[in-house]
Image (cartoon, rainbow, N blue to C red):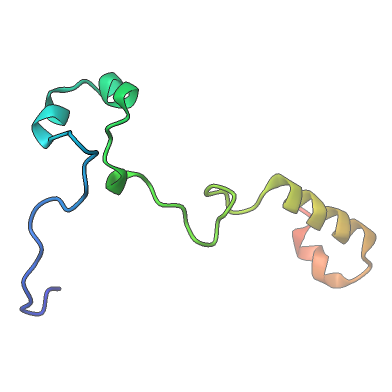
Length: 83
C-alpha cells in the first residue's frame, strides 16, 4: 500500500495544552472526561452526507415520503409501501 513511500509512525494528534501522553495514560476514563483532555484527533468524525448526526434518514423525512406516497397515484411509491 505504501508503494515504497515512507509510512508515518506513531500518533499524530495535538494534545490539550499542558497535558502529556504520560498524564493521560495515568488517568481513569472518568477523569479524562471530567478534565476534558481527550485528544480531539480521536473524536469520531461526522459523515459529510449525514448532517443529522449519523442517521441515514431522519424520521421526519421518512414520514414526509410516506405521506407523499399515500397522496400520490404514481407507481414510483409502490415499492416503498412496506416502510
